[in-house]
Image 1: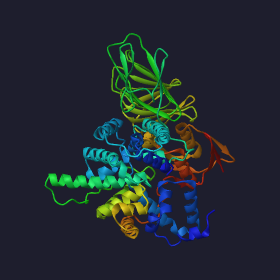
Image 2 (image 1 turned 135 degrees about the vertical axis):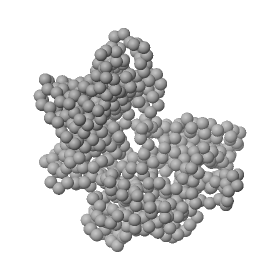
Image 3 (image 1 turned 180 degrees about the horizontal axis):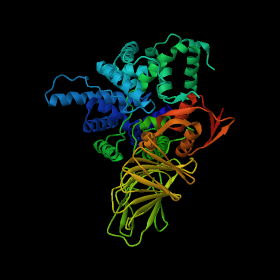
Image 4 (image 1 turned 45 degrees about the vertical axis):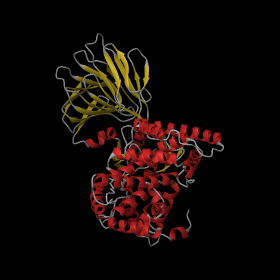
Length: 199
Length: 405
């Protein structure tokens, strides 16, 4: 990613006392953090609260923060911990049971930009079936790898697994989904919908 | 060309292996020429891998990426709270702060600039992850079009619609022009106006715009098009003039027929949904009816259309086509390109208008026909990648594209 280096500069500048740099980071990642937060919390106001708390805490603990290799990863990991704390707190307040992360939702793209429509609908329903069967942790791993585009080692760290464990978790998930894909040869590369007609 | 060794590694890959392979994943999520070339070569070398690759690609690309664009006001408000809550927090060890500040300011500027540009272009379409799209765009890629237009008022003054603030833009007679939050333009009729005043809205290449006329009729204007219309409909008919392409949802008013004129052709309606395509570089003017009924007249001839029919008007001749693929006709207003057995020139004419490029051909023109749809918010390189898979060879210099055989 071309901006990684710029972000590292921003982060260091923030560590050195410049809040404007943090504001830039805040604005770069707000939408992504919000989307990720909604997967856990499902309530926009709660997500906004957590984002606010996250940046307050970053500023307050500025002196103790490390130089981040990946700003995004740093933010996401801290954000996830705080979101899970929030869930625990909410559950305690409403007298629920032990906190759990059994809520991680993964949705399919509403309308893939490139797949032929009918084919897409078929695949979508198949994959939806498969997704329900997955464990929340499998869903989360897929989300972090394919949507947030974290590396395997980052996904592992975020999930508290070894690299091997992550690979295993994901490959089982993939196999389960693949098992649901309709057989037969598809017209084209999946995200390239154009069909070439013989002439 | 890639090393055999690199390719060999994939020889026995299953779809799960592909779906977990870093190189493969990034070729799906962030395609570039090198990665595409690599997996194309792999497929040619080991044809048996094609199905696994297709499955893996399907799985990877099937997950949701869109996020809502969160309103800037919310971001401002939360950031303000962060600042309030941390006021007085001591700043520890400040070193070479000045240097960093410059860097931060420069980056802040570029980030804000790219964000606001993106925000304007995509207000009506938030289905792709904005942040990463901005970040991952190759430096020389050409962005898709967006909501852009120029409004010329009755007194000749001009308002650029992609930068004008929301809210009231102008008062003309008793009529107020309002730019709404979603980027639409609306004409609010005050009392009856005196003389008829005309405004013209013009979209450039790579622009589109939506407006609501004073009678409540809605008009979507495609790229490189214009609509001249009265700010209030006071006469006995509602008359507008179109160039390029527009989709109309005309508010019903039996006492005032609505007339769209294109060159010499007129489409006359009472209240209905229809599309008119009158680009100068297309072979003929096409009026397609989705709902209601319309009369299409040219020269001395006229025809009445039923829903699903299309009138093709060429020099002094009107022909009617039945059972038109309506989805393909109005796909543009839904943010899609829709090709239905179209030759490459027809495909390219649409790309020229939306990406503001000029296409020329070297050698013979490829004879392939294209069917399918793709989103109009793709960048040009993403679109071309799709065409490349269909063995279309091209090169781009600036905004000129050359297709070779």
